[in-house]
Length: 468
Ligand code: PLP
Image (cartoon, rainbow, N blue to C red; front, top):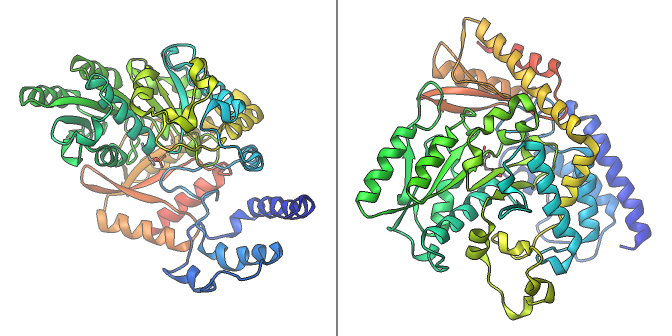
């Protein structure tokens, strides 16, 4: 594709995306495709000769769009949001255009330094403890996902708890233990499997039925019992905004207990953490100043296209010590000077995209005020929604809802709750998902799409009421 052809088709693609965002509301939120539908519309074999880009765009509408669930739809209330925004899309496009692979500082100094700087900016915006900043012993890095953050936190924890041994992870099964609440995201168990400590090493903490938060007393008991039995506690993971109900664990108390036993405390604030851009919501991060690592996803609720997980450590030496291997072909003067970060040493893969660029375009376009307005708008809508649920005797709120996630159920029971949820989702007018709260089926209303307005929340509520 010549630069002129690229320019022409690039304009078509930008027009297509702008039109899509304008007509998002005309699509059913949840794709109506059945398994196999999309593949049935694709040729069995790849083309022998190249095709015009127009025919690809035509097939985007014909083949792909029917199989799309519209995550940017203003009535998308499922899972957690995956915000896309104009400045983030453009930042991502610029990163693709530059085609930089920023594994080492030397392979593109701007990619590394912008990333370090953006993570420091974000630490300021979230009010994180100075220990997480790059001018301390810590620092931030962009991971692909919160799941990767959990994995590298575990690997760093194993490295530290075993006195700097580098081969620990693969031989760890049966020696080390990991602790987290039964509400915590499954990525922690996956990290245990991948790091080699195994699922059996994972101890699930009881939760308080009223708050859904981890029971710190149970952690104390488990730690004592495991140490007495000869295990080495390696990692405790606290959630700030657990996936099911948005539960907030007592981070400071869990950190104190972890540290008493030499274990690492990681905070998973994948969805909720970004709410700390608002002063009045910063309390959600109480205790995070004691953590060894912390992560939140701008790619969920902070206007930045997937993928962008912001991950900070208080002691970067443990992370780098666990992950750094320097083969001859990567040696270079900058690395040897010790003056630069090589982000390949902070993650599992070697190669990495220039993701800091989209964070830069987002933070500059919206500014701190724009980010706060974005979060505040959703929190206010969720509080209003919770008020409607509380005022309707057929429904019941099932968990605290200080942010933008409301979990509720029909008093008539699980079957009624399930059929109301299915009917609303099948209509295509809105999309919500479910969880279990104290054994009961609950509907999750997660408000966070960039385009969501009060009228969309109100319409979803009326649709749910109509099914009650
Ligand atoms: N942690 C929490 C609390 C989550 O809610 C999620 C996903 O929703 C994850 C981790 C996994 O996120 P990722 O897709 O970034 O791995």
